[in-house]
Length: 467
Ligand SMILES: [Zn+2]
Image (tube, rainbow, N blue to C red; front, side, top):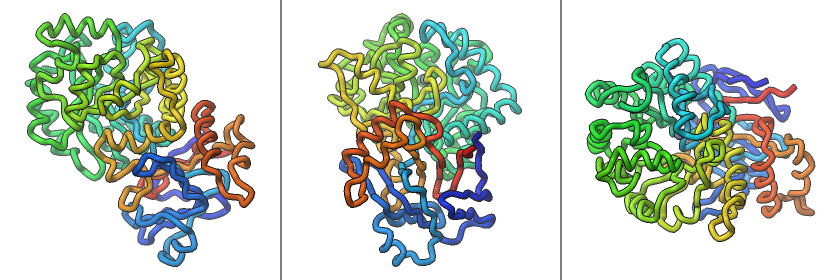
């Protein structure tokens, strides 16, 4: 059984009491445990039996040797994580849909039929204020309980529902980038708004939420088949007014979709051009899927410093195809990971890491990328932070970044219960080679119990209750 924590809750673990003050926290916090992250040079970094100290605002001020930490910060409140656990940076989900929370696994033969039969009927329900408020809380809880502390989210088409999502992200103090999902054709009349109708709502939402604490606004096109040229043009105009705004959409997910784009945009040389002609390719543009993207498109995405969100389980679920790490890397396109709920089959980026490996192994050998644990962990932490241009704030354990992290227990997995002991050398220290193996195995055999806590800005926001 899980529960969500408020800032006033108390957590008990390792026999120690963690007090989250009812008043604003005055003291620094000193966390003691084994911290694993990706270094700025891209290597797996292990701070074995070390300390992380964060200030009263929740920013990391120091990471390293525990004796030194105690000397430097004698008044910091000490919290010790259980042996056998690792502390990992909070995960970054770069593609997920808020109003699809409850249709995971709703089966269909392909993307376009799935949209008609499951997505449009479900997304219409978010017009109801009470329902959408409840779902915002459920959605954010699902993110946090799966270790996701930053996310790029397709919001609802309805302003009130997307407002509820922002409110919940603010309440939990997480890094949430979201915005109204825009579409004006080929979906359902209740979900469609013309550029003229929706523009004032977008502008008021940007002034209300963009850069409020850790919230950001993303101009969101469902995909170009559902957006008329006038709607796409309006999106480009809004982005041009403020270079700190994001853009997100889908691209090159299925062959039928690509054919449809050709018919709807006969003047465009390819799918990417349907966005490019309206200046929607920026360093803050994130394109989901990008499975069948051509070399010519990749070249332009790289030139504009766009990012892509790889969504492995979704691609398998809808039979859309296999993503190529190699081709995107050849063109310096930043790759991040997305759960793509609800075509993705869970909120867990651990599971997405495992699915990513399985999908690569289906590719012919010459096209395959063998993902090691470093690449897997990188894809859900620092690579996601880079795609969101937030790598100065999140993604690994560096001074000045937010203390967003998860407490991970591989030994809680039924297949890995004894493996942690094998990670230690004769002197009791952790051997990095075994951590690589353990993380890889964790991704392939992930179970929910393996994440015990999630912290945002040094504050507990989720604790899994044990039987
Ligand atoms: Zn999607």
